[in-house]
Length: 166
Image 1 (cartoon, rainbow, N blue to C red):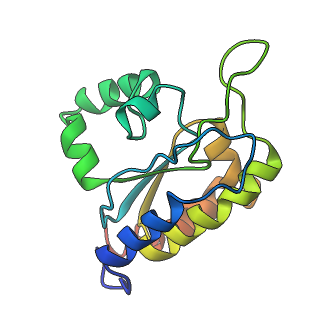
Image 2 (image 1 turned 30 degrees about the horizontal axis):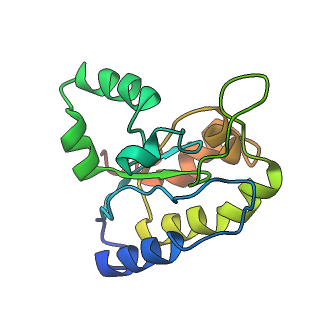
């Protein structure tokens, strides 16, 4: 955790306990899926859990995770180490259900808005230096606000200015 850290792992764990009781979205299917409460300068944000994540009770625990971790393993970062060192989050934390036309349903704008309080709290607690956005919905939560240059500069100002490299 960086020198700007003002929160502790116990506060992050308390946040996750509160998150697991959330039932703000009646169309979403619990349980709430969260990663381990890892105080990390790196955060990954996905879309929402799939139907199988509830079986393993961890984000990226099934098909999308297999692809994601295959990419990281190609550069020598095993899944277990990634999960120990990166805080794993999502735009929405419950399974949105199936789309009648096939595949998983994309969370609605109202569901994303309702869940945003949890994601914003995590960003506030962690103050990550690097955010890895995984998937269209996660990217769209940040893309509409700024250009990529502005997003990069505000998320990782020391890297943008060259003052300190990660």
